[in-house]
Image (cartoon, rainbow, N blue to C red; front, top):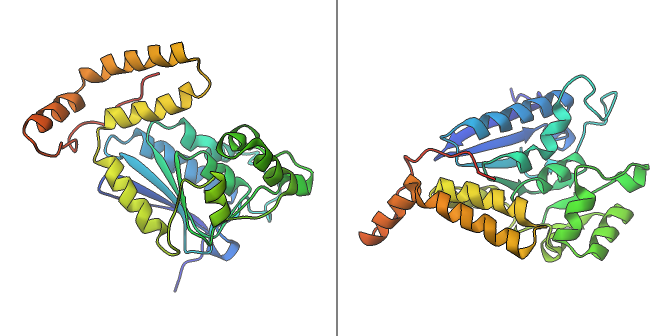
Length: 263
């Protein structure tokens, strides 16, 4: 008999960890217990040197996550730290890919926004419902969305609480890669494997730099880059990259430990 107990399912292959939000009876809505489990799964993945990339997805094709489970007494996890899960991917050194099909609303949208890369198909339906319920869109939506879209489109999306479909989400910049329907998880795995095969030190530094340098002045950006170039040059990644180039072969970073990103 199929188990319908809400859960966070975790699997690992080829240095890629897949974390699946599973509550299909409620379009993968997140209970407080699920959110706590998700936070623990993300923390564990980020501490594991054998995990190079994390994929976040929803069970089935109907939803990534429709947000908080509204049947719970409070939208907020007043007895635990589950609310931290939705913004946690942005704090990780490990890159995180959101693979979105179907509904991605509320807290599910916050979770997708906090990932480094968002893949979706045309079945994706994004919504920030706060304005429709007298609540402020939280989780960095007001700061992040105007950078991804134009400020006007971010205003339209947040103020109207409208549904934004996959094609429009890609056209507006919310989705980074639009893929054929039904292929989003497979394409996410392909992309994750490609990232996982590259230099872990460089990948961690790119992620750190993208987050850090968005609002920096040009001189500060150049100074940061120079520091990171000097730091990366003495890592095993660089030695392997140079050796591979000289031998006219593909580099092999598989045995190089995932580093802690430097600021």
